[in-house]
Image (tube, rainbow, N blue to C red):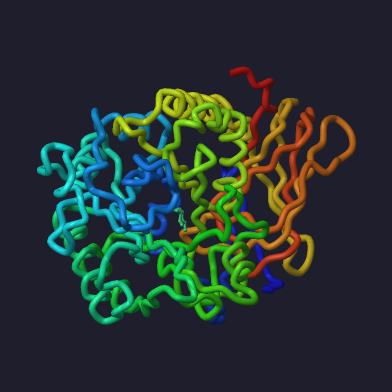
Length: 460
Ligand code: FUL
């Protein structure tokens, strides 16, 4: 860990940190930083995931590939309704399962007959992917696509070179027919049993192809290369959560073994590559729609907690909201999404530290602090801490203190900050707040301290 850091105060609660002039001439090893696509991806904070396909009609989570395409018959599919719900939730992008493990393709592909073209939907002339991408773009959202590598229907699966060719053909169709695609989602799940067909995927080839066809898209998988799985599906990023990783710790999607889970959850302060964590979780127990789960949709309070444990831990939230058999998002889910956004908007509407003048001081090797005099007493219950990640991620340990007219008291402790760290604490009335940075993995840059009122009671 780097033990030398210096803060320079600026006029707002945003504090610029930089090396003094002499030290700048020495070459400090540069820390990884996000690419423009990774930065935009993280700043979007929230994306919606849409699991839709034959499982929607069979009431299953994993199809076995033997589903009859004729079961795919959404009566009122309206992708604009999906996109509007996403926009109202404050999501900036949507990701659709173009093909799940069952192999059924939601677009008319030349690679297999197992697709919407063989279904009664729109008399076999429909293209869900096209309607989805167009709806996203019409609502000002980015579109992303999930293409399951594991394919339980395709006869070529297990004949590795042949299936890899076919998978590349599917990627090529998806990435050349529909305009800009912002994210390509590679699932690591693979349930091949001991007697199943074993497929050896050519990941470097897949990654190269996506980069070539959609250079601005970010690729998600356990192994990135651009954004990584957070290591669980319960909506919780690791703590600490570094956006830097050691690329040798997880080298392909679905990799298992000692250290993999830790590497996914926590990243690595000494990592050489920028690969931030995406937190995928469903608004319902399942990924696909099941009528029996209509009364098990997450509450607004629960969704807000997800935001705290994902975006508020330097991650991005990918919230799954599955279309029903009608091809629409369920009214309960749509209403919950809108209330979720309303809750976030009201909670974070007013930064009580906005007009405060920060003062900085160096208190020892690797230890710096930022103090804010709010100029009046305010009652706070939430802090949002930020690093300017355009310049990397550095903070490794901190304590937040508050003081009213008298003594300082600890409000929260933490490890990493990164894009955002959200801390909730017992409501406290303060006039001054101090962020003590106690350990770093590099030079902290552009630290912001934002303060908000305590949360009120939840009523649904
Ligand atoms: C997993 C899959 O097996 C689930 O069905 C779902 O798609 C989830 C997002 O990823 O690996």
